[in-house]
Length: 400
Ligand code: GLA
Image (cartoon, rainbow, N blue to C red; front, side, top):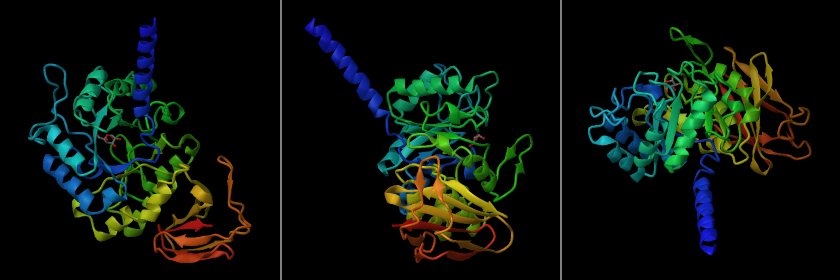
């Protein structure tokens, strides 16, 4: 009898230890780099090794970008005779194991991509019907992050498909961040919090500030269009389960001010920060945007609250985000094509986050730290004034 109790006890302990391993995987929005936005399927062993080195040398790893994720195109066109996925031997002649080791040795984590359908979007083998086998292989390869896409899924129920893959990952026993990428089509914000740590809320991003880009059959979205859509979903995000407005386009062709507006907005929205540029060749300006510690701290703040659009007057937007220790972040954004002036009277504006019950304390005086200049820009005892060029932002941290 005693033996039986011991066995049950050991079994329960082991079960809860396994469950614990999967907790806290993304208490803050995940940060890293993904190959897709710049390289598409044109990826290789040398690109990945050089990118890993560049993540370290540029200071990006130390700023928090730890996940290096290979997107579509890393596999051979066919599974092997046992049904296993095979890394493309031309792109990765040394196999995947050596690269994963190389990346891990630099203090980074490694991610892969696949798709819930029969084929990926670029028509490589999808996971449909191979969920448990693929998960076992990812675990055996020491993978830390899986982005799971939604092409070629006709007739499949999204919630079921993503739940199956999530269970397969747990069964495989290695904690992996599970990034749900079904473009918001099946409202994942309503069901995906117990399934994965982040879910895409929109179709793909494109490196334009404010227009829709026709890709022939589907529309890629601008930074501002994505922000419009993602803003309405803030109630669903929080520690461990994030709205994902897609990977960053910083350094991929927009102007400097547009890039920093994009980055500021993603931080205000507590978005996962997955850089999508060529880290090996980025300019100093791009690096400075991506590694701005103060802006990153707003994104990664432990309250985990997705900020909100407080006002939008004639294309001059004001965003707020409550932060730890009574601080707030504010971002003034000029969406228009002409210069605009900003005037904000902290004592008169009723800034309240009704959803999470935070109110800007009118009886306190906060210091205003300008997160893009690093300077102190006065205090909340006086109205704030500033000038904004088209598509630029002023981002401040209000400190008590
Ligand atoms: C979809 C995803 C993108 C990328 C490509 C790869 O479009 O939304 O982020 O992964 O597929 O084919």
